[in-house]
Amino acid sequence: MSTALLDIERLLSDYAWGCDEGDWGLLRSVFSDDAELDYSSTGGPAGGPDDVVAWLESSLSGIRIQHVVSNFRIDVRGDSAAGRAMFLTTVHLEELDQPLTTGGYYDLGFARVGGRWKVRRLREDNRWMHPAR
Image (cartoon, one colour):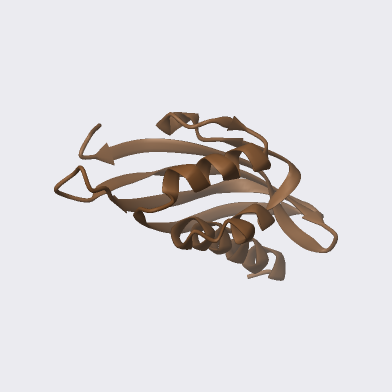
């Protein structure tokens, strides 16, 4: 596996850790300044990294959540890369008597910025949710 692919997989792990641990600085650091992010498949916003990270912080603070990102299909071409990854997310919400679990895909684009990989595009494609809400 190429170093670029390992770096990109680590970047996506940092994304999940940032969300799950409430490390908003880490989460913001994975995105390029011009990133296009879209969480509309779950009723979230589409926009730039500052607005979307602020929304994630307000949405995820105070809840228990765990992301698993896997099955990477990423093609690297020089200083850019694109592809998809699967996600499985489990959330504990006080109003539910069971965990809320969602699954789907991230459609992704990346750029090497200053020698480091950054997410330039992330579109969440949520395919299912249990229990359905």
